[in-house]
Image (tube, rainbow, N blue to C red; front, side):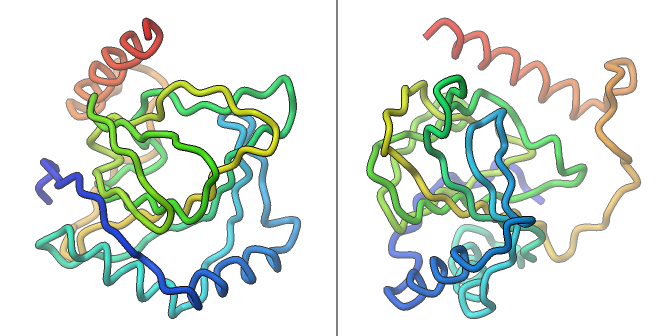
Length: 202
């Protein structure tokens, strides 16, 4: 798959009924499927969304790709200040969780703040019910620095796709030993280190 992937903003992702259905589904997510990710101070809801909502996500994601995509993972996440000692932040990174190429569609469902996403140094500011497309495994991405106040929040749906014709490789887990990095791992680590230095200087 070509990972000079188009970074575009998709508008008007869901209709009003779909948004209502999403929040009803999220409210009904069992407690054992909710996880506070302290590293980023967001609460992840690890629950697949209703199928008609998933169908809409797949259809809209396909607009940004000339290859047929398959939705592999999705989750709902709420960023907010949950404790004074937890900073809400998202530093430069690539998605090491996935050991095969992934196309990412980040959907901003609802928010009461502005908080740009940055991909390879370019900022994208989403409005509610808009999404940004990028290659999470091949493009370093992050959020601008921002201090959250009480009551501020951002609700996101993270969607990760692979190409339908992709042939999986036996890559195994991400290696902790740098001497075991693949060429892709080395290139991406160098890019992440570069953008992290810029981020820390800002």
